[in-house]
Length: 119
Image (cartoon, rainbow, N blue to C red):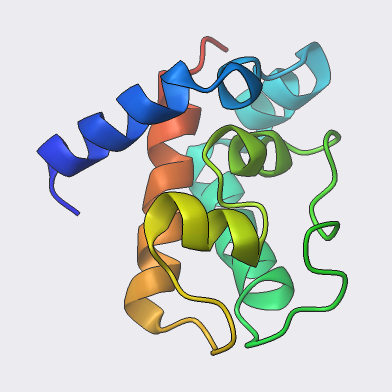
C-alpha cells in the first residue's frame, strides 16, 4: 500500500463515526511513551499473528479488547480488529490464513495510526 492509498484509507476511516471516535486514553498513551513505538509494534505483530492470522480465528469479532493497550485501540480505529473488518475495509478475505504481506500491511496501518496520535 503506497502513501496515497494509505491516505485514502485514513480519510475513509475518518468519515466513519465509529472509527473516528477512537483515541488513546491516558493509560494507553503513557504505555506508548514508556515502551516506545518499536516495542508496541512488536506487540502489534504478536497480536495480529495470534488473534487474526488463522483462517478462522477463535472468537472472531470479539477477540480484540476495546482498551488497555494502544494496539487494541488502534485496531478498532483502523478496522484491523477482526476478519470481518479486514475484509470490509482492507479487502482481505476471510476463511484463509493471512499472508506475511497482509500481516505487514495490518501492522503498518496500526503504526501509521499510532504515530498520528498525540502522546
